[in-house]
Every structure is written in C-alpha cells, then in structure tokens.
Figure 1: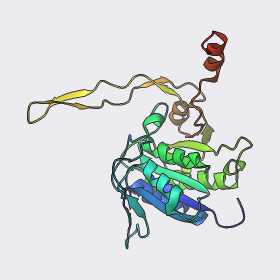
Figure 2: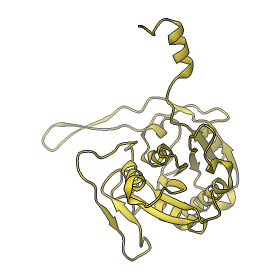
Figure 3: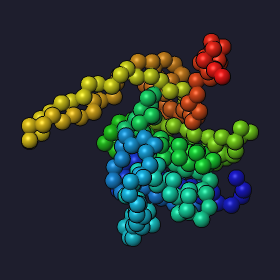
Figure 4: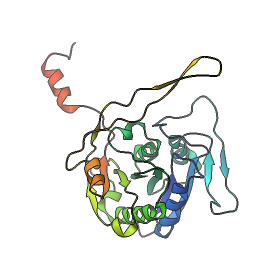
Length: 264
C-alpha cells in the first residue's frame, strides 16, 4: 500500500445494529478511513449468497453512535459486492468482517456470512479478514475488538496486505476467545479443524399441525489436534487461519487423469 491512509471496508452478518460491528469499527478507526456497509437484518449462516430476485436498497444512518453507517436489505456478500461494483468510488485496501457472535471454525467457515463478506473482498482482489468471538452473548466484546485492532494493524504493515505473485489476495479467519484483553496476546497461525456431522434437525408441529424443522446444532469437534483452530482456542490463544478460494482437489485431479477419466 502507499503512504496514504488505508481505506477499510467493514461489514458483518449479525446486522448493522450488532454490538460486535460497532466495537470493531470503533477499534479500527485509528488505522484508516472507514466505510461501514452491513446487512439490515441478521444473516448468520447466509454463506456466499447473493440476492438476485429483487433490487437492493442502501440506507445511511444519521445520528447516534452508528452515524454514517450504511445498511443494505440483503446479505453480507451483497454488502461487499455492491460496494465493490459501483457504490464506492474505488476499491478499499482491506475488507474486515465481524465481530461475529459465536465461533467460526472448521466447517463453520463454509456456512458463515461473516467469512463470506471477507471472501467477497478477496474475489475482487482485496485482502479480507473475518473476525469471530468464540462464545455468544457479546461478553468482553470490547476486549475482542482491541485484539482485532492488533490483527488489522499487523495486517496493514505485513506483506500479506500486498498482492502476491500468484495474484491472490490474502484471506484470514480469526477467532478470539472471550477473555480480558491482557490475556489475548497469544496468537497461533492455524489450519481448519474438523467437526462431526451436525446434530439432527429439531422437529416440531406448527399451530396448523404441519411439521416444521429447525436446523440442528453444529457437530462436536472431530479433529482438533495441535495446529488446528480448535486446539489454539482450547489453549486460550487467538486462532488465525489463512484460507484460500481454490476448492480443487489437486491430488485427486492428477489421480483421476492417470486413471483414464479424461476422454476424447
């Protein structure tokens, strides 16, 4: 980046009124010029969904502690996509998302709207960081925001904030324990762990006697050995996982070609 003040785009999936978003914005304000574009409503579990069936509206908050925030009647991905494709005059230098209410580790990252907002930035060539707090309820959210500030500051002075030789922007998934800031000095660079299958759906009867289904809770930890995000959090450390968008299984690709799957 140049010597100019970096432009940081902030979004989330809990909605623009979420305490985690406000805490994150206030914590990173000293680091650059901030633009906030977040969903109007909670969109947890939205993953990388775009709204294609209706137009989107953008509104600006006037007054109060969220003065100047923008909110969209859409998903986290909508927020960053609209920002990148016409709402902003220029691309930001960094996209950060969160702070999410609840962890995003292992397979959670596939469903997470928090991670999706950061991914959308990366898809446009802008580095992204997704922040989540382990326990729900916003306990010690200000401490988590101070820790997020430190991660963003490190990112801005790091080579990770610049384009790589392969042209792929950096994507980091950060999980922060609900602890006092004084206890959040230990960081671990991790890989994603693995969960067991999700819990069964919860079946109930509607007032009309129809069956309704609630998605079950996430599965318990299956692979949380040393080096994983689960292990780092269990040790009381902040987990920082570098991720990538390439879903191709390259080893299997080579094996399939060697076994005659290519035809014609």
